[in-house]
Length: 235
Image (cartoon, rainbow, N blue to C red):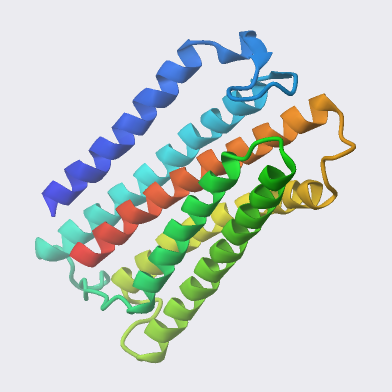
């Protein structure tokens, strides 16, 4: 258990270190052409905003993971008594494996969309993979709701079960961040559907940046989910 805690803490520290180093470079003072793009000039301010937001999200999940292990240790240490419920491990529904595969595929698809070029076929490929990423993410969220229902239907878990409560809490917080990502995804997908043939070079560069930011966000939330899923499976 402590090994898993150290692994989770270590991963979070690595992410935090990368975020701090990125901010220390002051990328908001740098202007230029997007990497791999010849479409025009753009500011990196949105990137800074995203990385700052991910730093806050990392801290949030660290707090919840820490609370998870503290509650687990209290139960295993025999402190749970009277007003505090003991820890009954949750038998994770098998659909969580399907959900995990769906989120992995979503991350792969959005990365493929990020690698599009400015040709006609490149734009078609970008639209196809970007839409697929959104659909797979929606499938993941639906699967998470089904997992909650499956657990609750067993009758062995409810709001009085700390393991079940933490399961719902962690998956819900993660899911809400994906819902927020889907809002940005829908706006970008709408711009992609309108086509880029008549778009100005600056608009093309902005769209490329939007896809890039979405890819970064999806990869991050995939990493968070893999950490959460590993912790829940092992406890």
